[in-house]
Amino acid sequence: MWRGVSILGLAALALAIPTAAQAQSYPLLCRGGPNMTIEARFELIIGGQTGTYVKIRFRPANQPGSVAKPGSGECTWIDRTLNAQEPSDFTMVAKGIGFSFNISGGGRVLEEGGQPVLQLGGASVSEREGYNGVVSAVLARQFFTVEVANDGQTLRVSAVRPGG
Image 1 (cartoon, rainbow, N blue to C red):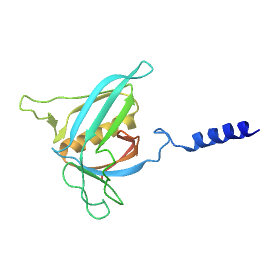
Image 2: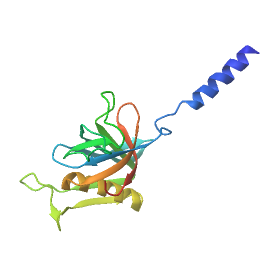
Image 3: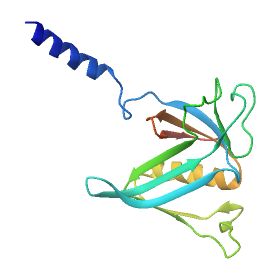
């Protein structure tokens, strides 16, 4: 009897612990800039599917977003600053999306009409727009907000909000 109850109790406890996929997402307010770095690669992600992995590193801001907007290359929570245990990077992962941009010989991303030229393929329109919005904002030093959940290694992006 106790064995059945304890197994049932452990199963219930396991269901109550959120995984990275189930974790609550929170808005992270950011401002692009030269202090941010973008790592983008197309690779095998899960079960033989290919996709794009984009990691953006930032500096944690000294004030919460409710007090002051972050400076160039910084991100912050709306209600508080990041703590020392929280990652200072966020990751966007999408199956079946291609991502690229061109860099001139002078090390600058090529622009058209004042905006970086990004080539995106595959995935849904909203997912492509999310990638485009974040990367463009980083390169153009603009504000943006991403919904993220801490998976223990990085802040995993679940949604991109317009502006900041």
